[in-house]
Image (tube, rainbow, N blue to C red; front, side, top):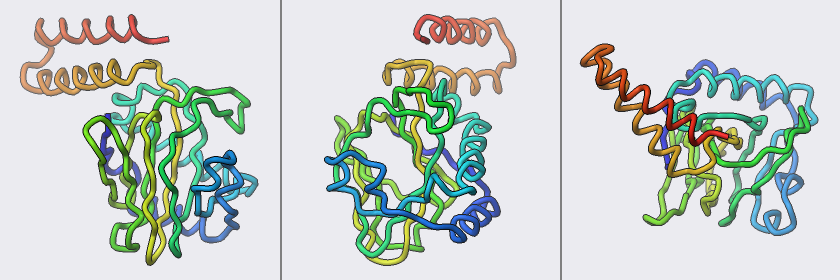
Length: 225
C-alpha cells in the first residue's frame, strides 16, 4: 500500500530541522550501503556520528508516532532511527530494494524492514527532478510531496530516486517493523479502521460500530506477532 501522510511536520518544524541540518557535516551516502547499492547511490547523508543526529532523528520518529494515519497504516512495532539524505547536482539512486534486516544503531536490535517511509523536507519547487518512483504490480508511481508530508510503502517494493538536475532535495527516511508482517493484511486492517472511524462519526458507538471494532481488534490479535 502506497499512502500519503500529510502534515507530519509543520512548516515551522521543517524550517527548524533544515537549519540544524545545514549547520553540520554531511557524508557520502554510499558509505552506509552494500557494494551493490553503493554503485547506484549518489547522494549525501547527514552523519550519524554528528552530536545532533540523535535529537533530529527522534524529532522525526516522534512526529510519525503521533500521527494517527501513520500509526493506523503501519502498526509500528520497531521503528529504526530516521536518517537524512540530500540529492543535488545530478544526485540519484537507481532501482533497488531495501535490505530485509537492519540493526538499530542505538539499541542494537535487529529489525525486519516491513515498511519504508520518506518524509520530505524540501518543497517541490525547490528542486527539479528527484521524484521517488515506487514500482508495484500496477506499474510505477511518482511521488514528490510538500515539505512536512510523508509517503509510506512496502519495503519489498522496487524503487528509485530520479536525478536532481537543479536545487536540492532534502528528506528523512526510515524503516519500520510492523506488528503485522503481511502487507495485504495491513492494508485490510487500515481500510477497516478508516471505515470504522467514518461510521462512528455518523452513528456514534452503535452496536454495528462496536461489532466492527471488535472484528478489527480480533483480526489484529490474530495477525500480529
